[in-house]
Amino acid sequence: MGGWRQGLWRRAGPAVWASARRLIHTMPLVALAAVLAGGCSGYFPNNKAVYVLLDTSGTYARQIHKSQTIINYLLSVLNPGDTLAVARIDSSSFSESDIIAAVTFDSRPSRSNAEKRVFHDVVDKFVRSVKGSAYTDISGALLQAVTYLRSTQARQRYILIFSDMREELKAGETRDFDLRLDGIHVIALNVAKLNADSRHPQRYLRRLAEWKKRIETNGGTWQVLQDVGKLEEIFSLP
Image (cartoon, rainbow, N blue to C red; front, side, top):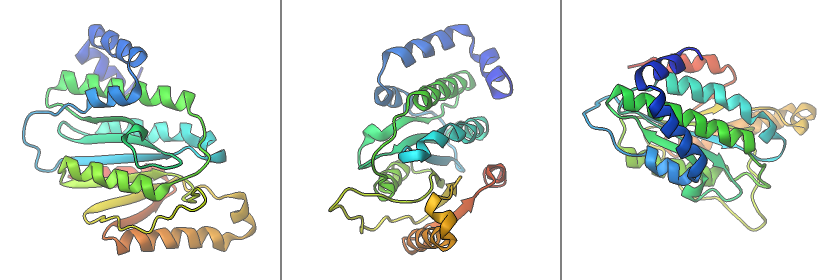
């Protein structure tokens, strides 16, 4: 083990990890998310809330393992009082059942480190067993993310989308609702080009331009990061 994992082990001890492993193997993911979501004590005036959306549709599901680097980085830089949630973009993402794990980190270092370890293992288990979805309801997932972020009352709020940003809905479904993204930063990561994009590059650019317009029209900020290393520039800010 290296980095933050070594620190977690030293401070929390084997007993904590043994309990964490028992939780992972005996509890459904959503139930575990509810346990992790227990509040933390203290006042955190610059706390952050980050909601990560993972696209599990079609061929993109085969890239989902790349998201672990991003999630591990977030676990290493988020502080007590900060919130982290990870959810899948499903066929109809309007349910809390799509949340893989969620936690507001406790003010006590030993408990916060234990929460990070459990979070890491839950996401790892999901990535190893993920099954692709037939459709990609990005709008529905965004709506769920906004609702969750507002409930945290965090000062800084982010939605990270790990997706090719191609929305595919079931026949007859529409997503023309307002998202109310005021104060929320939306960051698209690893926006892979589809096969059709290689033949028609303008489609890729048009797709990103349309999402940019929708996010900004609804009051949010939009950013595309192909180099995930640049996340450090964002989350190193106070």
